[in-house]
Image 1 (cartoon, rainbow, N blue to C red):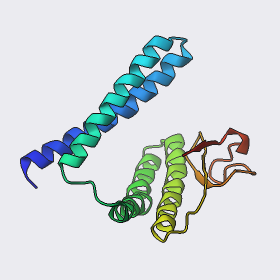
Image 2 (image 1 turned 90 degrees about the vertical axis):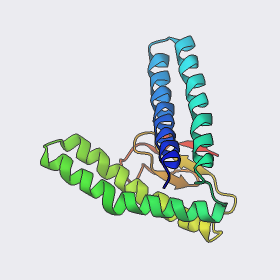
Image 3 (image 1 turned 30 degrees about the vertical axis):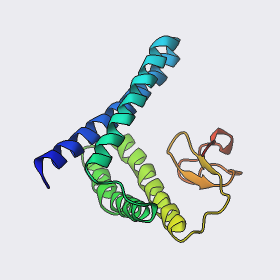
Length: 162
């Protein structure tokens, strides 16, 4: 990989993290009744997304949908088979029980994501709406009628995306 491609991917990571961080900051500003600051954070987050996408494309990382699905499957599979299990063990070893528990939830959700991407790759998603658990990120096909199977959050708290 050339230095330029390394730089593009480093910039992609930084811009992506800034997007997520600014969206978290916006939620906090909303909680503190500071709507104009929240709006600024959301605007900056959107700009960071534009930058991240441009860097990603310039680095040649955007494929067609079939290739993107395979990349997503590989990434999610790595996360639930290797990355999070190791992080959970480390958190447990450090006595960080709450972090280990939450990472366990995330690990379960990453496997769900991998399976959903596999379904999409086999053209098995037709007219499906997705609902997300606001606590752990569990992603469900269709409306939730029962509590989250990962963290037990009430079904009424799920929200749709699409």
